[in-house]
Image (cartoon, rainbow, N blue to C red; front, top):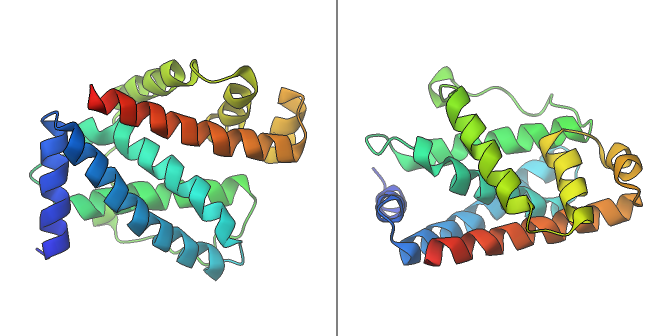
Length: 185
């Protein structure tokens, strides 16, 4: 095991035990690594690096909501990588980008699917989203949860495409801040 893996796993285990400072530190360290990962992958498929920040927020939110699915007997970084990779693939699908540059990894990186955990996470995200203004709720729900394109979301929400993008970015940032506040208590 690498030093990084040991440090991140220790933070995750402390986080799972309710240590809010460890949870914030874990999410901060993962954010930096995910930002670099997404920038590299997006450039490789001809996308702009500005889109990386939205992916970082999505991945951090998913890590927070899915943390109960992490098996402490296993290494942490493959679990985080799987979440990050699926978020990237979902992003590319939503944006109709080519997946030719994104080969499927080895089968041992794929996590088992737990329908009950998905239902709990969906409930958690819907509860958190109720705190956001209606425009942000609609934009995030349409694009991030329902998989619509930005243009389709704009029509559904009665916003411009740039309004949808801004609402998603600001909404995800607000959700991340809300999660951070919840973990402190």
